Length: 342
Image (cartoon, rainbow, N blue to C red; front, side, top):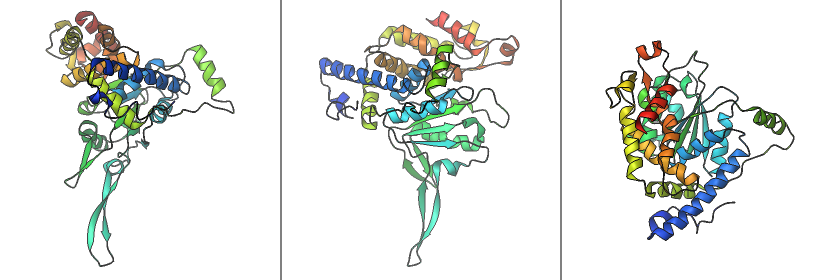
């Protein structure tokens, strides 16, 4: 079911002048987000948390890092997400020989019939609404850095000229946590640009049986559009207008301040080489609102903070040598953080 433009458009949230109109609009958005989640679930089996977190990331206006071993439907999830949300999408397979110009684009020298010469910019695949950066850690740091400006500022600069990216613009990158030969670790500055790390896990027995039966049949399920890009932007505007209580804000501040070296929680701080900055708190502020909306609620709670703490913080924390030698893990440290902060 595709939403009518008269019901959802990119101006609807800002035109809602009273609380009743805003609630009615939020109910409409929540209903169609539920439909979108179900539509993705008909194609990507069993990855309920990954599907929800990916939707939360896009609804928050951010980028996601999908981490999982091969064969867990990372690529399928991104492709399906693009179709269901009505986004123009492109895929880049990252390899060691990939150059920044292969992502951003390059200038070519044109000659007119009169002999006049001038440079013309040819846009690269980054000029899309949903960019899949497949196996992003296989490209060199120089090429990875081509995404830095785009992910934060939503434009690129080539030869001193600015080129704006389409809106919405989202990067969903994939990474294999097992195979590290021939890869380059993502720099901390780039990791911090990802709103969330979405972990893809092995399916349970019932789901794996369903995968075997349905993906090898003659009639395989295909995704259908539920939203358009304009309607998605409208929903993203709504997320930023949702109220958030002081108790939730206090919990986010306490959590992020404890998740850094020299932070407020000494039992955590002395295990960290580096930790969460203010961008982590901003990510949580948006993500908890988006999670509440997807679940049909119009204000986030402490439970939303607890549920999203790991995917928002996991890639923003690094253990120091002593902590690694003692067998401490990031997941265990985040559990301690939640116990202290919430």
